[in-house]
Image 1 (cartoon, one colour):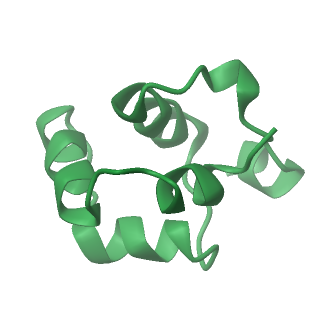
Image 2 (cartoon, rainbow, N blue to C red):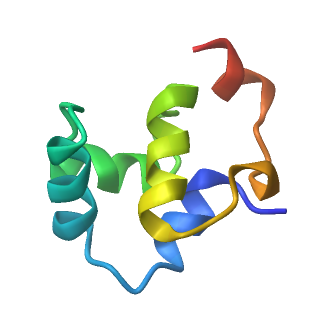
Length: 72
Protein backbone atom coordinates (compact mmCIF):
# COMPACT_ATOMS: atom_id res chain seq x y z
CA UNK A 1 0.00 0.00 0.00
CA UNK A 2 1.17 3.52 -0.81
CA UNK A 3 0.40 6.91 0.64
CA UNK A 4 -1.18 9.56 -1.56
CA UNK A 5 2.21 11.35 -1.63
CA UNK A 6 3.94 8.27 -3.07
CA UNK A 7 1.21 7.82 -5.65
CA UNK A 8 1.63 11.42 -6.86
CA UNK A 9 5.44 11.10 -6.97
CA UNK A 10 5.23 7.89 -9.00
CA UNK A 11 2.72 9.34 -11.45
CA UNK A 12 3.61 9.97 -15.07
CA UNK A 13 1.42 13.10 -14.99
CA UNK A 14 2.96 16.44 -14.11
CA UNK A 15 1.86 18.30 -10.98
CA UNK A 16 0.35 20.93 -13.28
CA UNK A 17 -1.73 18.32 -15.11
CA UNK A 18 -2.94 16.75 -11.86
CA UNK A 19 -3.82 20.24 -10.61
CA UNK A 20 -5.66 21.09 -13.83
CA UNK A 21 -7.77 17.96 -13.56
CA UNK A 22 -8.50 18.65 -9.88
CA UNK A 23 -9.62 22.19 -10.72
CA UNK A 24 -11.93 20.78 -13.41
CA UNK A 25 -13.31 18.43 -10.72
CA UNK A 26 -14.11 21.45 -8.55
CA UNK A 27 -11.14 21.55 -6.16
CA UNK A 28 -8.98 24.59 -5.43
CA UNK A 29 -5.68 22.77 -5.78
CA UNK A 30 -2.96 24.56 -7.71
CA UNK A 31 0.25 22.82 -8.76
CA UNK A 32 2.18 24.12 -5.74
CA UNK A 33 -0.41 22.61 -3.38
CA UNK A 34 -0.27 19.27 -5.22
CA UNK A 35 3.53 19.46 -4.88
CA UNK A 36 3.22 20.04 -1.14
CA UNK A 37 1.00 16.95 -0.92
CA UNK A 38 3.57 14.95 -2.91
CA UNK A 39 6.35 16.04 -0.54
CA UNK A 40 4.23 15.09 2.48
CA UNK A 41 4.11 18.66 3.81
CA UNK A 42 0.31 18.71 3.89
CA UNK A 43 -2.30 15.99 3.93
CA UNK A 44 -5.26 16.27 1.58
CA UNK A 45 -8.81 15.78 2.68
CA UNK A 46 -10.08 12.29 2.01
CA UNK A 47 -12.32 13.68 -0.75
CA UNK A 48 -9.35 15.34 -2.47
CA UNK A 49 -7.24 12.22 -2.00
CA UNK A 50 -9.96 10.08 -3.54
CA UNK A 51 -10.16 12.41 -6.55
CA UNK A 52 -6.36 12.33 -6.94
CA UNK A 53 -6.49 8.53 -6.88
CA UNK A 54 -9.25 8.57 -9.49
CA UNK A 55 -7.29 10.94 -11.75
CA UNK A 56 -4.20 8.74 -11.47
CA UNK A 57 -6.15 5.53 -12.02
CA UNK A 58 -5.41 4.08 -8.58
CA UNK A 59 -7.98 2.13 -6.59
CA UNK A 60 -8.59 4.26 -3.44
CA UNK A 61 -8.78 1.07 -1.39
CA UNK A 62 -5.07 0.56 -2.09
CA UNK A 63 -4.08 3.89 -0.53
CA UNK A 64 -2.60 3.81 2.94
CA UNK A 65 -4.70 6.41 4.73
CA UNK A 66 -2.76 7.51 7.77
CA UNK A 67 -4.84 8.65 10.77
CA UNK A 68 -3.92 12.32 10.28
CA UNK A 69 -5.11 12.10 6.67
CA UNK A 70 -8.49 10.70 7.67
CA UNK A 71 -9.08 13.24 10.42
CA UNK A 72 -8.72 16.26 8.12
